[in-house]
Image (cartoon, rainbow, N blue to C red; front, side, top):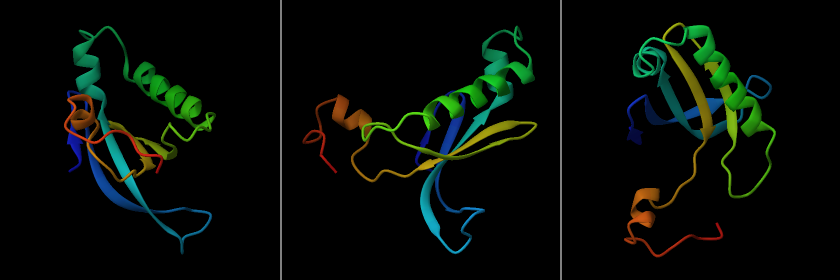
Amino acid sequence: MLGRGNFADVFKGYYRARADPFKELEVAVKFNTIKAIIDDRNGLVMKADVLKEFSDEYNLVCSVDHPGIFKYVDYYPTDSHAIFVMEFIKGTHLLDMYNGNAEGFSEE
């Protein structure tokens, strides 16, 4: 596990694209728990609304091409989770950088 938040767990994994099943990518896989999000909003949203928000987020991030923004690789909505497959970026934990425990950001 790479990380855990209130609504999601993130794991390191490997991904094979449907278009090129022989190419394997190192990725981060984020499992967003739909029920936790609905509960956090006091039940005032429906599952379809939450899934639409995640679909919109996926489409927005995919439309941006910037070296400072990670890329989404794929998106899988299920009954219980919205699963994002993202490029895996090696490096220092962002929280360590924020707290000043790292040497700063690298061009890599």
